[in-house]
Image (cartoon, rainbow, N blue to C red):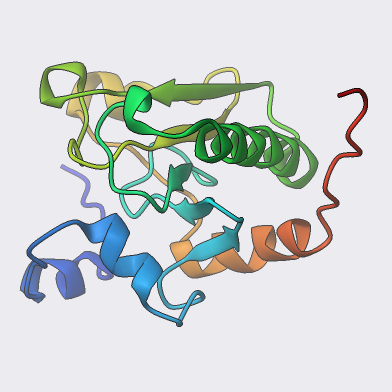
Length: 168
């Protein structure tokens, strides 16, 4: 039997788990790099997923604590969608993936790990990125750590330009 080593997981296993909403807590802090926040918009932010499906797995979430889209004012929803669009563009430039998944899981039954604060998942995909490890062992191999992923993606968010508005 072969072994896989993931020594960075020990810090999580031994850490005290936060109570309350982890997304709200992260945005209240000013240490964006430490919290893997890549971008802060007017009403939403982009953060690395701490438990990624693939390297580059992002989450885009409103600052407003809400579990369903209908609770968000239009300005918040529009900023959230602009954040999703920007995340897609960044992943295309940084990783040149074969495809991109964008998803919103509303409620535990839909697969939401954080079910009380909605967030979009935006992640790059490549042909064949689901290999035997996932199928046979129910284990995913993530080739890059979160620090390396943050360093790769952060410059793309800094140079992001707001789209020019046309029309009314």
